[in-house]
Amino acid sequence: MIEWFTAAQIVVAVVGGIVAIVMGAMGRKPSDLTMGFTGVVALLLIVQLAVSIASPLTGNLPTGNLFEFYIYLISAILVPIAAGFWALLERSRWSTIILGVGMLSVAVMLYRMSQIWFVQGA
Amino acid sequence: MSTAPVSAATNVEKPDAPRTRRSGLGRLLIAVYAVLALAATGRSFYQVATKFDEAPLAYSLSALAAVVYIFATIALIVPGRTWFVIARLTIGFELAGVLIVGLLSVIAPSLFGHPSVWSYFGAGYLFIPLVMPILGLLWLARNPDEGR
View: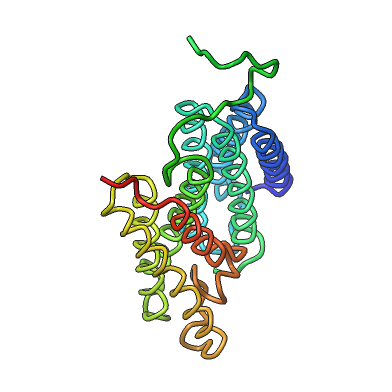
């Protein structure tokens, strides 16, 4: 895990989450903007997966438990994908809100992951 | 072809489906419960797999909570009287669980202080495990089963 990349990911997820919740509250169906944010969040998580796999090879080791870290990461990857599918199947204001809730959940999970990697003892 | 008046904002949804526990806000409930079930299952799996002996009682409860969350999520989705009752039971069980375990973790932290979904009234999960069952039970009360 790389600090600046993780921070950037969290920012994107929080912004996307808030935008989607506001748009959903306004009654908007999932749009290119909200689906776009969800897609970017998912994509960045895949990149995070690659970074995390490669990190120990460059001497970047987690301070906490790697197994716990990966449970969070895999869970996090599933969330925007599931939310995205939901939004594709049902085009309503609620699916837009759900996109937002999903992205905010990812932000929280990323924060937890960063704690496990950088701060927490195993 | 829709007979509803054409709206200037074509991106705005016009809901007209019959109201069930799955409509509108119920969808959000389902989504949040699904994320909660995922998080609880993941964390419980990690605890039971790696450090069960540290706090077997707390981690067993954690595993039970995860299973109950999964059933609650399913019960919010699947229509019918039986699953409506299961939804009430599982969500009610969760509320009781978060209140009881929350209290016990404060009173006897050596037994119940280990981090789990219900410890300290769900503080580790932004109190979502406390708020959700309350909202869930309220929602179910307002949207009783579809009657069949």
